[in-house]
Length: 198
Figure 1 (cartoon, rainbow, N blue to C red):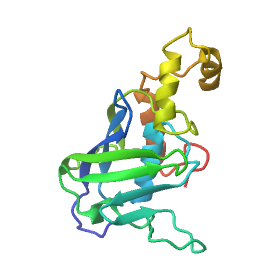
Figure 2: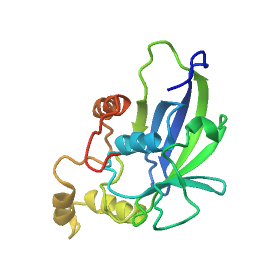
Figure 3: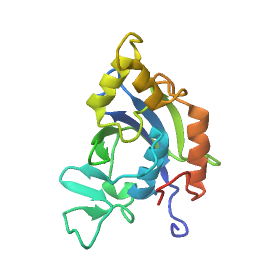
Figure 4: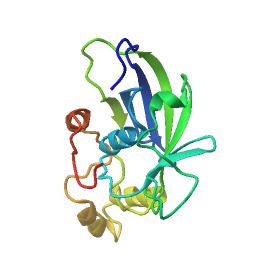
């Protein structure tokens, strides 16, 4: 809890882009600067439609933040207590975020704008985005690009198998903003929207 008479939190407008995806896959989010990097991770999981089933890390320069384990010492620092504000980000600052060290979903996070929080503003929120993020455990961005090529060609010998694997409701061109923001409201209230959540 912030101390009394502390200034209101700032709002960061972040553009989160999946590296290597063509056409681009991205989300534009508003978050407050007083959240921990672990909370930002949970927000990103919702925005990407993932289930927090794998390890992750944030990096900026030589500093790395994520889930630490005393039995496996590394140079990783805990992201639980690290506040976004403590990174001293400015407009145009960049942060890297990797989810799932096997599939290596690598994201560029760009700070597009910083402003004071408006009275009564409910955050976090996803303002907009382009295209669906890949299904969980698919094998990385290049495997996903191959999947999209198969799904675009019903004559491909793998089309039926791949269509069955992703399910009947998967649409690579769609972002379900109302659903994403419904889930983000759960995160804002400290609730856990799905399996594997912190």
